[in-house]
Image (cartoon, rainbow over the protein chains, first blue to last red):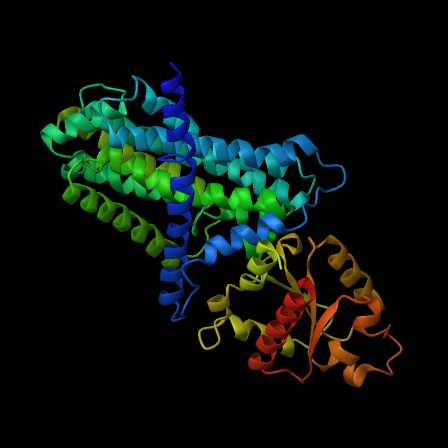
Length: 313
Length: 144
């Protein structure tokens, strides 16, 4: 029994949970910043830059605004971090060991991946800053916009695998019959999934909640020091977890041979670069444009993917 | 010198305080972020909220209205936070020194907070970067 608990703790805290995902996620944000810099014809930051940023923020003063709810203001970032680490643990464990996991972990993951956004809303709303409230309201609307198509994308995987709600079974089915992404419905689902990833990571054109040039950091405006560092870390971890989640559910996962793991990392890099290119070639849209976009064409495409999956193509 | 203070010298996020400048210094500050100078090489970013800032770049000769705002902004910033006076006006009020609208120079509005003075009308981006580098070097020296 105690061995089980130790294994679970190691999985949560070290690999593939908190520590591993934090380091990998911070490196992914470096890739994001470096590629962005190169696109803009700049040199860009050094590899360790996200780590310097994190360390620096940990050492800064923590300002709690007068009149803010202290517990919600300081607790929200920790809730977001815990959810991101748990999501990383579940996705990572399923990718490493398809026989593990439990029936319904797909649904739990959908909820866990929404928690960091909700934590941002909670923290911003408790800071008593009008611009943070604007940011919180936008983040809430954005969550409402992208969750529907994201769930429909997962439904495609569920339908194609014959109705399983376990990540491990999805992987086992794909190992036998080829990954879902190599079918018409899978391609459509993957495209919708990339757009939802863009919004989940709050990257341009869907960064309305943190619009720096417009509402001065929006939801994050009152955060300083360690809580801000935790929010940045959570976002870095989500940069890792969400694309890996898409790869596991739709694109065949990472496999077990050395070649397939390298291929899996390649898949992750492809998704990451796609997201970075979208971010660098689009301006920020207004929040109602984002909602129209997600509830209109994107949801229509996701429904089409589900129908195609039911037909079996 | 502590680990976190060392990290601060490697990632100085700057916040731009325009205390009524003629916009020339502001344009030169934005030049620092553009491809030719690209201060993100040294980890510097321009941030939107003063709570995220590690250095305030103050431009312009402060008048009676904006001096209070500069004081407020400095109080709102999370410490440690450096103040760097950019341009002749911010350093010593420049040609506006005898104007009726002027208060005191920046280093008297924020006593003991100004870490570097970058003269010039406007200062070159190289000079602004040098000012930030010298302020960070002074911070390193203080921590010993």
